[in-house]
Amino acid sequence: MNEILEIQENNSTSILYDVIIVGAGPVGLFLASELALANCSVLVLEKTETSFSPLKKIPFGMRGLSAPSIELLYRRGLFSQLALHKNIKNPHRSANTSQKAPRQVGHFAGLPFYENDIDFSRWKYHLSSATETSLMTEMLELETIFTQRAEELGVTIQRGFSINHFSQNNDSVKVYAENQVFESKWLVGCDGGRSMVRKLGGFEFEGTEPTFTGYTALVDIENGDQLGFGRHITDNGMYLQSQPGYIILQDFDEGAFHQSGEPITLEHLQAVLRRISSTDVTLTKLHLATTWTDRARQTTAYRNNRLLLAGDAAHIHSPLGGQGLNLGLGDAMNLGWKLAATIQNKAPEGLLDTYFTERYPVGQKVLDWSRAQVEVMKPSIQSRALRTIMQDFLNTQDGATYMAERIWGISLHYPLEGTHPLTGYSAPNFTFEDGSTLVDWTHDGKGIFLDFENNTSLQTLVYQYSSQLSYLSMKATEQLGLKALLIRPDGVVAWATENEVEEEKVRGVIEKWFVKG
Image (cartoon, rainbow, N blue to C red; front, side, top):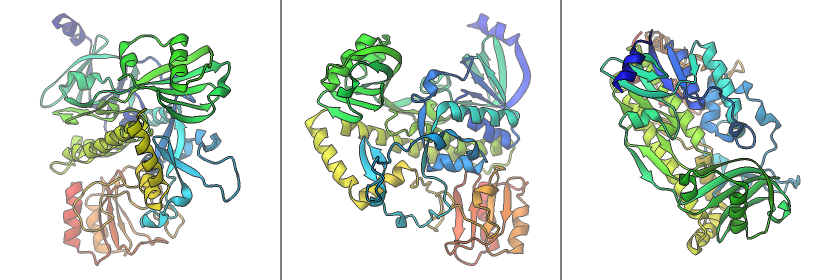
């Protein structure tokens, strides 16, 4: 090791970056953009030579975006670049076009819930101008958009660099990759479920072991009509065919095949499919296949001195429900502005620590959500009984509303200090008198003090923090009785009031999150 490090030291780069991010997936690229938007210098190191992979294309790469992820795309002016969702038929829309036909808008472990069962009136702050609650995209589309965005903002992306070591002190981190040394003030691991940053950084990774091996495959089937379409839970597992030849399987073998490392052959896949489906279907060609499990783990800390983790590097779980990408993008949105403020000495004491205290519980909930779905889907008498009860629950207004706000992310909340019920939630997308909406004013990545009363003394106060905070005073078509709000750069309401505004109180709230410029 000493010999390798000595060689690498001789090839050290002369640039001291503010941040090195390991991993050029959607989470790493979006985080890089957030940091660069705040004028931080960023280097992204990615081990693969190219971003293209068949697993990132339709149907393998299809992902569902929830409301918080869609909001962040709007807030940074990126949503208009998403095109794929415009051409995708809603998989939940019934083939029966009658107005009486209920529209499926989501599911829990394959159990559907419907739009007409949801009580939208319970979401007081979800305005008519709110952004979409869900849509479909693909990994390749997101990575393409985020790569272009990062490069436009000056991020350096280097591919073909696999890290093998790093060292840190109180001031910086040295990263050793492919016989080169890179140096930065901070290192962030966004390098997935097998993260080298996590493994080398001494992070504890606690959780539960897998109960099944999942298969996702694109095949030619001789007699695929025996399978039908949709999800089927049997006495031997689960199989799903969403379009001809695109199958997903869950074989409850405690993850044995996935962990064996054996190649997925046509014969093996056919045997598993026949056993689970109790059919004699014949697979004639295997185009592409991958395996996965429901292993669910989370690091006990997201930071070790100058090392940070985000996305799958910090938490892994089964892809059931499609929560992983949304969870990772939420990490990046939460971390970006806090790390940038820390680098630029504009962070109040303890600001960076709130990344863990806010995001760790969100990760815990997603892991439990994933585990709960697995329990419902197990091939057992007990799980069959649980599925029946869960479907009854989903068919109620309370059940459908609860599921919708969880799956769409509308219930996402951080327990911030403050008495107003909007505190800690995503800011409503107000429509202003000039026709603009709140998200139109958030593209620069700054926080916003929204003053509906046009108070000149508050405007003067906010200008003292102008490098991080913008002052906005316009009437909205739906003000919800509010007089003023403080909105963080990630779109979260840090403070809100329906009462007369006290200047000194506002100053204290602002200084909790921002430092004078």
